[in-house]
Every structure is written in structure tokens, then in C-alpha cells.
Image 1 (cartoon, rainbow, N blue to C red):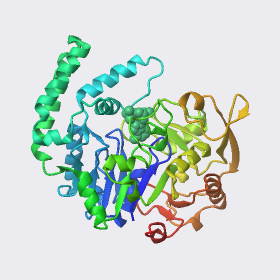
Image 2: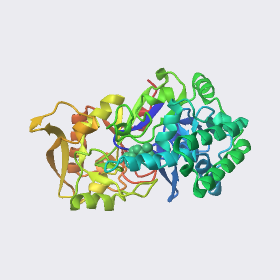
Image 3: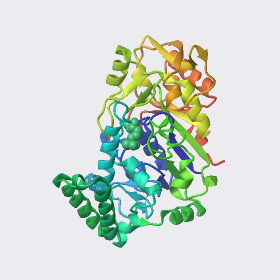
Image 4: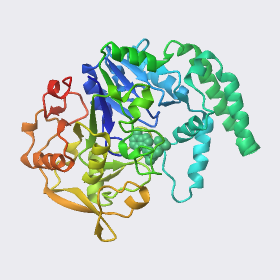
Length: 434
Ligand code: IMP
């Protein structure tokens, strides 16, 4: 049975821990979109690791890992990430397969992004500045550089052409010495990757289809979150890839028929990093409480995250869009100690109730949340391993989430480490083949 794990909010839901936790039940972990804008945090033996490109399954020696064609890759950053994994004894060779049609992020993408953000004046998107958006633009502009070209050596003429094109477009001011230095570093990284990664860049779609046909169990790892999906998120304040479950098929080159179940990950509250509408955002001391207790600072950029109450309207939208079989709820313990917790159960627009979730940014920016107040809990829920150990008020909060979304909470992550987990249904039932 194959399972997709997707984010149900604006990213940072804790997918890294969930993928790491579930990976023991799978043979392959395959990532289908995004790049090193993601930061998937995994704790092993009390130590923290953050992977950006590499699937979080890499920490399980028996798991094969795929970086799909839907991804964009910063080769220099990937080499650093691999070196960091090696330095902690993770044997990756023979366990990491990179699609020959994943696209390469070049320094031009970062330069273009910096300008684009500046040109947006007072309303920048607040991107991670990793060149993700412009790399996807080049993909769709049919001039992107492929990982396959990196290992077959044809990258040399291609990158010259890209550089010439860029200089022609923006004029000589585009090539001050620091750009040239960055470009030289980029070329050096490709030079190294040409041999170093030669064994792992392959036609991963064929490999994966073969493994699926042999009966391998595959976990599809989403990055970012549904509300950042370029088509289904709060456009234009989104990333440039398909983070929702629909992205699995295209981003890995397999039929959607292979995705048997979808689990969505949601925090017990909301966060967002970067700009864009956020109806339940808190600007008061409760928001600060959540940020401080939840260490809500970007895993990739270190930026403080915006924090707010759980928005059930947006959550239901994401659950329905992905048709999730179950919700994995994370960071409930961050709400411990609050005398009152709030759930957004509707929106109004110009004083009138709104039907569903108007996901378009200009509309969502104008809605006002309608809240239900729920009693909080003073007990610690940190590290609980059974739903029975939760205070009744916390259980009532979870039941309300289930009732509103119409989806069961199957798992509660009660802390960053693997064992800090409470299954609401036995794992073999949740992961049982259909
Ligand atoms: P980009 O993906 O760098 O183009 O950024 C576009 C938007 O997505 C910005 O608001 C980013 O902060 C947000 N974003 C991208 N990746 C992540 C992530 O992994 N977690 C949370 N937000 C993200």
C-alpha cells in the first residue's frame, strides 16, 4: 500500500517527523516537488537534522529515496546536504536516486528572484530567495537545465547559453564581479556533481514504476503545504509547485492509481511565513506565546513565522482538495496552558457569511473569521503516547476538528522525537492494505 503525506496548511506542519516516523513501514520514500525551500526536521537519538532536498526517508537504512522530476535542485546546496549526511554516518550512495529530468536551480534564478521581489514594491511574496520560482519559470519556458545534463556533461554549453541570454536581457550591469564569482562557484559545483552524482541520476520514473509493480511500498513525501500550491493555494502568495496530492503523479511519473491513501499533516494552530492572507493571524501576546513555545522560526530561512488560531475553514478546504484519509495533528502541546483556545469555523465578507473557503488571496484577505471558543487545558500534553493520556478538554478540541472536517485524526505528534507520538488508531489498521 502506498501513502502520500501532504501538508494541509502553509507548510511547516511537521511533515519531516511524520515521514521519518512512517518510513519504517515503507521500502521507498519519494519526493515529488519543491526544492531547498523546504526544511524537513528529523530528530534521531535526540539529535536534530534538517534535510532540504533529500527525502526524510534517508535516515532509515532499508529505505530507498527518490527525488522526482517535479523537483528543482540547487546542486551546490545538495552536495553540502549530502556531505552533512555523510558526516553523521548516513550511507546514501545506492539509496538516493535523482530524476534525470529534475531541474537545476542556477544563480540566475536567485538574481531574478531578488529583482522580482523588489519590483513588487510594498507587496513582495516573501519567498525563501532560493531561486525556486524562477527555476520553475525556466522549466515552463522550456529552457531549463536538467539533472541529466549535469551528469552527461552537456551542461557546459547550456549554462553558457543561459548566461549569454541573461546578460542580453538585463545588460552589462548583470555581471558585476560578485555575480561572476557566484557563477564560477556554480560551474565548479556542476563540475564536481558530473562524476560524484553520476551513479544516482537516473530515469527515476521507470525505476519507481518497476518497484511499484514488484509490490514495493512507497511513501510519497510532500513539501510545503496545500495552501502554498501554485494552483490551489492562496495565489499569488504561493510557491511554484504542486504541493497537494495531485502533484504526486506528475512529479514522479507514475499513475495516480498508485496513490492508495493520503494523510494530511496539520498543526493544532496555524503558521505562515512570508506574505499573504492569514485570516486567523494573531498580533497579540497569544501569537507571541505560540511563536515562543512552538519555536516558530523558519527551518530554512530562520524568519519568525506568523502565528494564529486553527482555521477549520481552510483546513477543511485542504482536506477536501486532497481527500485525506486522515489527519496527523502536530504541536498540540504548544497550546498547553492557554485558558481558552479558539477555532475558526466560518468567515464573513462585508458582514455576510461566506460559503466555503475563498482561496484567492484578494478575497481571503478581506474575510473576517468567526470563532468558537473552547476551554483550554493546564496539563502538559507534551510527549503523550496515548489519546487516553490527553485531558478531556484537549480531546474535545480534537473531536471538534474531526467533526468539522469530516476526517479522523489518526495520529498525534506530541513532540519532535519519534516516540513522542500517540496513535488514535493502531498503525497496522491505519496502514493496512486496502
Ligand atoms: P518560494 O517557495 O521560495 O518561492 O516562496 C514562496 C512562498 O512559499 C513564501 O511565502 C515562502 O515563505 C513559502 N514557503 C516556501 N517553502 C516553504 C516551506 O517549506 N515552509 C513554509 N513556507 C514556505
